[in-house]
Every structure is written in structure tokens, then in C-alpha cells.
Image (cartoon, helix red, strand yellow):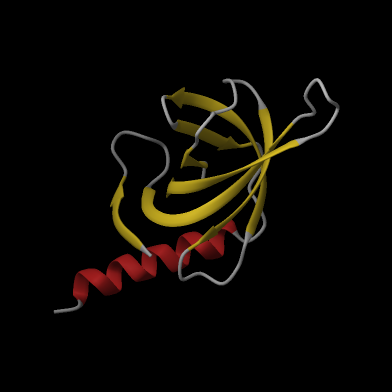
Length: 118
């Protein structure tokens, strides 16, 4: 499910998670939209970080759907690539995706339960 949480000087608390994301980028030269399946590393109220074999360029708008291990609802979001490094892509949500608040509450509850369990 997840390992820990971080809220170092950033606007949103980040949850380290295991999950899958599909990124859909705009049509390329062929006119087809390109889908890429990536692994989700962390998620926050503002976006997510994914492992990506070939990250889209910074500034690229993407459509994504992602699922977090142990959570039964897939989240659909529109976002923009705001950061890339070798093998990583940071995605900022353009608007709050439906169901994101419930996911954040679920992650927070799980973190608290893990902390309190012996």
C-alpha cells in the first residue's frame, strides 16, 4: 500500500505508494495519442510522481488514470508534466480529480493505523 509520508516545505503532503498509472499524451506525428503505463511512486492533493521509461517533456498536458495498491477506485485526472529526471515524471493536477479527497483520507487513515499498531 504505502510506506511513509512527507510534507517537507511543499504545499501538499506526499504519500509514498505502490500503484500503476496510465499517461495519455497528445497526438504525435502519427496523429495517435500515446499511452504509457508507469509505476506511481507518490501521490498528493496536487499531483503525483511516476517512474517513467520515457517521461513526456516538461509542460506537456497529460490525461492520466491511476490506481493505488489496496484502494479499489481508479482516479482519472488531467495534469501537466512539471518535472522530469531520468526515469521520473512529476505531474501536477490541473484540477482536483473526482475521488481524490477520499483517496487522501484513506491514505491518512492507513498511516495513522500503521503508526498506532504495535
